Image (cartoon, rainbow, N blue to C red; front, side, top):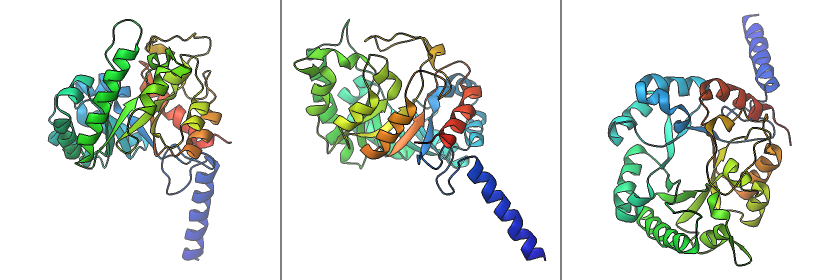
Length: 290
């Protein structure tokens, strides 16, 4: 009788998980359609980290995340921050570093990335004056190829995180096309921030279809309805909203992303209410169907 009762309890628990769209073994934010894996870009909770690193990492773990992406270590050395991650059972898959550091010391970044346990180290902003231009783009191409080669020697993959300003027209396409086409696919990959593809009027799904296998990482975000985009690479942080409540076709994007070979997905919510929005976004991803 006890064995039978236990079996019933387990079956009910499994059905309950299925009802929420959680596929066993896939982790938080995944379901029948979207397979993930889903992590968190820790920049989402930057204000909390500035006050309390251990407590905020505990919050991240409490959301159910197992993997994260970094944007700094909040005055801790890479080794000390790694200890804090390990204490919560969190793995830092990727991290962002400044463009100028990639130009001056890519080997140093690679060493830090290895200390933190990262597979990827990348850049989220190319310094530029006014509109992004061909000269700045070609400087980035040279910087990224050099950094990619240096990082690959330590088993770390370089990536560039799209930010919207790269879609200035160039030739028969855009400067982003030039950037992607002239960086070495063996040592340079890309992180698609879908808000910063949509904001300048591009289609994340079509870009994934155009360049399959070039985007190994993705930031999943949504943009408040009614907000008009441009090529500035900036918008008010309050325009980051709960996934599924904004203007981006997330079903189409995620379907295309799974076909295009994206390996890791990170929720990045820059809004001041990110801590309240993140669980709702996870629920959306668990229930999404396509």
